[in-house]
Image 1 (tube, rainbow, N blue to C red):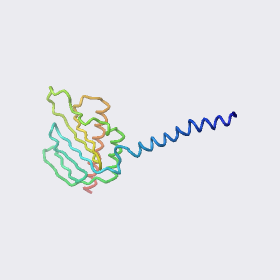
Image 2 (cartoon, helix red, strand yellow):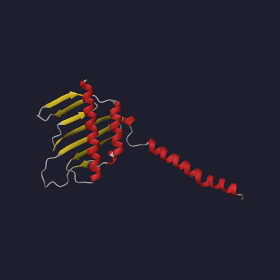
Image 3 (tube, rainbow, N blue to C red):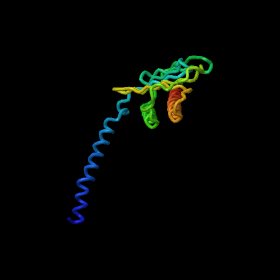
Image 4 (cartoon, helix red, strand yellow):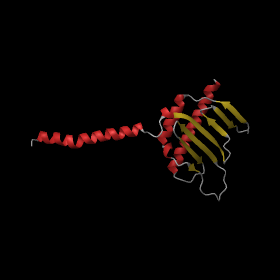
Length: 167
């Protein structure tokens, strides 16, 4: 056998099937991605002290209500643009939101501290992802950091949308 024939044989029996398998495998993974923005419908965001999640936003209906520092409940109709929703979808994906546990509340119930609690739900055509996060969550610090970063991004988008609406 010549050296050239050995290289062709090696490529035909090892390299080509490996490349075909990789294309098939990763093609199926991309095709069956769990949460695609094309299937995105809405986001629901609620927050408040303890079990009182009085501050709410629903992107499907545009209903937005929040409690001011003086205790006044303000209700508005707030629309968030498709680009901002895409930004939140990508930020959630970057932070690994799809792998967050559903319940991230404080496990030690002996200490009665009322801390801020957040409800985040991304709705898609066939499924949704919901997370209930408590600031007093005593789990993995990196998970806690990812939750706080996502919450800040959602609040930033809502604040910017409110400013744009007032202009």
